[in-house]
Length: 373
Ligand code: NAI
Ligand code: MG
Image (cartoon, rainbow, N blue to C red; front, side):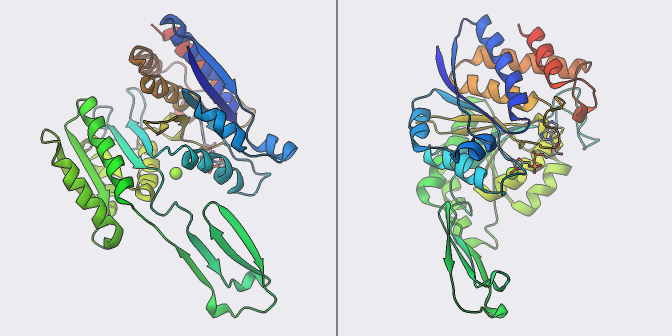
């Protein structure tokens, strides 16, 4: 019996999560595994009604769960950034989910935008550092003359407005953002990438940085990568600068097996990865803390344009559910879900609009349930 927190969230979040839960329940039932869902209402509606985002009491409860299954958050009614930083980022940071694991896999039967590549060429993992780099929130925008009376100071996840009572000259406007990499933060993610490659029987780990120009932080990263690689003599390594790597994602994605990346470059290449695997509706991600509680989600947002239409692709969410079961040690369940998804996509009769079909979100979920073995 697993205790799993369920946060459907906003927009299409609840629609895709419903299918994810349906598939997980069927797959677990076959393997005699029970799931005790603990549903949380966090997201835009709850915030508008109660003014509550993610209370500390809920965070304490989340810490006791076996995993968190998350839909998406974000609503046009709410200023961008509030829900994202106070729910999603708060959860990632507070629970120290320092690994963002993103499989990039083009399933047979899905035609991605790379017309000379098929499912044998696009099948790798990105291991993205999830807590450091430029995402620590140390930055500010000072003396912005467009907001005459306001002077913004950003610290951590919180924003502080300070009233000024004098006019600001335009030339003095300043913006800055600091990125940091720590030895501890880099060592743990790079080691995870090598251990992950070993566990999956993969033969190569690639690293990406910009050590040629942003040498301060990324030299440290590169040194730690080299030192770590020395402990894994059976695993090959290679090095890329971020600009070159984006080129190879398009021209030679078959080069990659496991990529380990600092946070910001990981953010960029995982979106590119989602595109070459057939679009944002296909992609799943995990935010992992191997010593704590991890969170599993589709990588897309709340897609307000699709809300209530039941046409969103639930595959990313369903695959995130499979990743969750694998993380919990239930390999058989994970594999059965992955195979059912593969069968449905290969067959191609039931699929959503974004990947060339006309089936509903629910029809795709039901078809995947039917294929579970
Ligand atoms: P989005 O991912 O919601 O949508 C981007 C585009 O992809 C839209 O055209 C949408 O219709 C389409 N799309 C997304 N998911 C799909 C699916 N499952 N099937 C078919 N098509 C799909 O990103 P957008 O529009 O930039 O952001 C919308 C809201 O979501 C914003 O409030 C944003 O802050 C939030 N967001 C939340 C995330 C999260 O909760 N993890 C991640 C990204 C954005
Ligand atoms: Mg992104």
